[in-house]
Image (cartoon, rainbow, N blue to C red):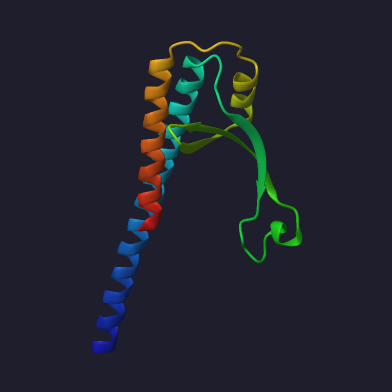
Length: 132
């Protein structure tokens, strides 16, 4: 009978852990949606964005993934910028890339920098979530 009680406790503990993981995943997804929204707002405010736009390809490290055979994931579009001696970068979606490359002048610089700061804050929050 004691073995059954232990199994019941372990099962309930496992269910609780699964619920926590679902909440964590949803929190990450919510922050990524908010991050994407902030990037869109930033791109709307800035007609010219200083920095470098480049694409990159990556390997996830899973042994059963196609990237383990050499076919990397991507392209991922990255906008990098250096300000005050510190580097920063943000990933862009394909539809955002044209907005970066086609805009000739900078406007609403202060508001754009404020949005960039919010993006960096969200990135920091995501990093903290992944550390848990």
